[in-house]
Image 1 (cartoon, rainbow, N blue to C red):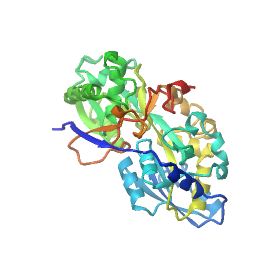
Image 2: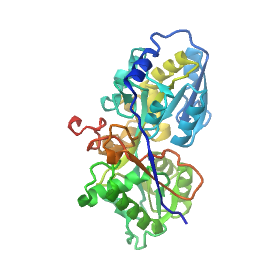
Image 3: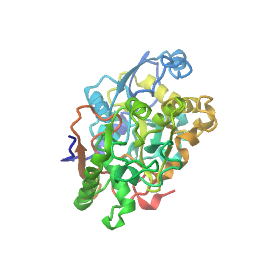
Image 4: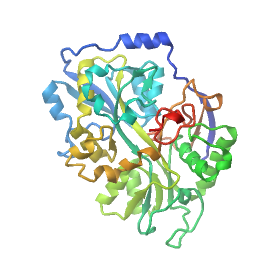
Length: 408
């Protein structure tokens, strides 16, 4: 039986001024001769060379143009990415927001010289100075892709989209006349506490939750109580996107938090599913290509970061992964993504997303305690790490700085 276990850790990510100055002086000032190699830690599907589908290849052309041979180490979780970067030997990593500041704090990544990445100016302004890659005025990486955690549902069960996340949190009879017990999935990963916190923030305002990543003891207890009550409804705590696709195909699953990747895959397979972002909003992820502090091939790495911001590459990645481009022009530059691809993947939902975050020393005392909930499964979650609480302030969806007055 899966149990929720209370764990408590503390993570500080504030670099001392001297460390910031040192990091700034170690940045590459000019591009030199390419080293012939490039090693990247990435999520599955992020670095494709046409081996799965010949149409999806944004590596081969780069290699021919630059002479940099790309090798990829696929990681299955943010924790694995951090572990691999701690071990060393890699040049770049596509880190999610629940890992990026851990890498900065550990000195495993270095700030990048934006003068050497001219396409940085093309990035969505809301992502250019996002707090999960910007520390002390320095930019630790290049935004790559982002996406919402949507509510996926069976259109055989729901003729119209569910309006609230309550369909996965509360026992009820679904529109097909059957109970939701045993027909719901939940994400396996500590970061899922934020989803529960967001639901409570909107449905139980008396709790006083202002940010799903910043919880006091009473709020945290309410989140755990909600997840314990949800447990009898859950068919599976998923951590493998392809396994979830199979469950919706063969196991009669009716509802689950999911990613556009699974939704698009199931639709391509002619399965009766759709997705929505309920009235409470949604959590989400934004990934950054970060440069190792010990990169052996920095010139190739800088060329890749520039290449990764090409609108066509951005669009092709989004088409393959079911994500959204950090460069808005990517929405119209890829025939693979198509004219409506960004709309399908949820581009318009940006301001309703509470992006994954990592705690910082500057957060209020109550928010500096990282809370995690772990089940009995031994597999690690495929996108989330171990941190649920986050930066200070009462940030709103779309307010990436963490300061309520900076909402665009």
